[in-house]
Length: 338
Ligand SMILES: Nc1ncnc2c1ncn2[C@@H]1O[C@H](COP(=O)(O)OP(=O)(O)OP(=O)(O)O)[C@@H](O)[C@H]1O
Image (tube, rainbow, N blue to C red; front, side, top):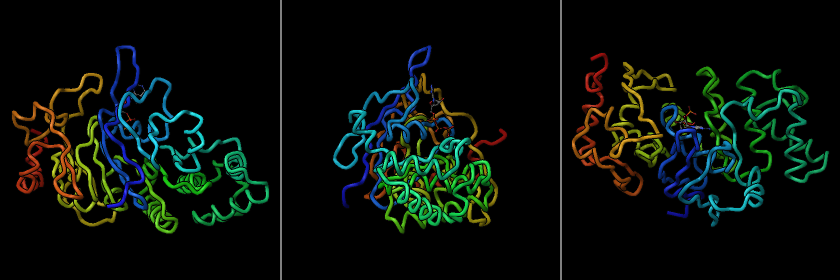
């Protein structure tokens, strides 16, 4: 296999809080191959946004990368001086934040905001910036005649398209999109995801898509990284991780979400309980407390190991995954309502 575009090794990101430190990402490792869409998926609070933001080093004031490496094009982004990191943003790595309104300023027209990036970051003249803005609007399926509109004049779905156009402005290699379709209805979600996939393939982009919704991953991602409580529980090709999930958490997530394609999926089964506190996480497997298959051995931390060339999992019982999948498909296994 060729070198991945991005390789995250043992990444730890912590927030300083009054009582100490919250290790929001705690030794996470995953790879992003070139020209593919990698989904970072897990429940709210598992550290997805923190991990994604660490890759751009645009983080909250109380956040710091306290360990690990982020290898991108032969350099470790975790240690790159800010001046060089800043030069990479937009040009090599672009970020689409959780709400499109966070990337768009309500008081300026969209054209002005695109021009800011194209002219200040990309060094373009006024005419080239205008031409590129029109091209970008065409690319995301919006009439360039609307460039002079303000963000509030667009629907939610269109605003998300504008945010994607903004991210693509300087032709980056890697686009990190944080929950790009979360607030949208299912039909618009599909339109945006189809558009993203089409652009990714046409432009040969690499994309990291952060989402809590495993059906979004199943719909669009080539690879899947499942996070739980700051760690990677399972990772690999989407085919491997979602058709043969080998971590009970992934099995549970699959039961908990409807299918985005509208296929009949039967009853949805939530995973009862809540993830552990990241300020004081348990020593062993972090999912053990909610896991219907936990054993005594789960009091020790399971390492992330390769099941085969395209699939890694951090579960002591991964060797029995076939049998556990059969059990996991039954609602009663998850003790719902007991
Ligand atoms: N600025 C901050 N200060 C302290 N703790 C924070 C801060 N930002 C996030 N956290 C904590 O870090 C953990 C991971 O949060 P993060 O936002 O990365 O998770 P997430 O999986 O992206 O969830 P969501 O989808 O809800 O954003 C959570 O426990 C959260 O409360």
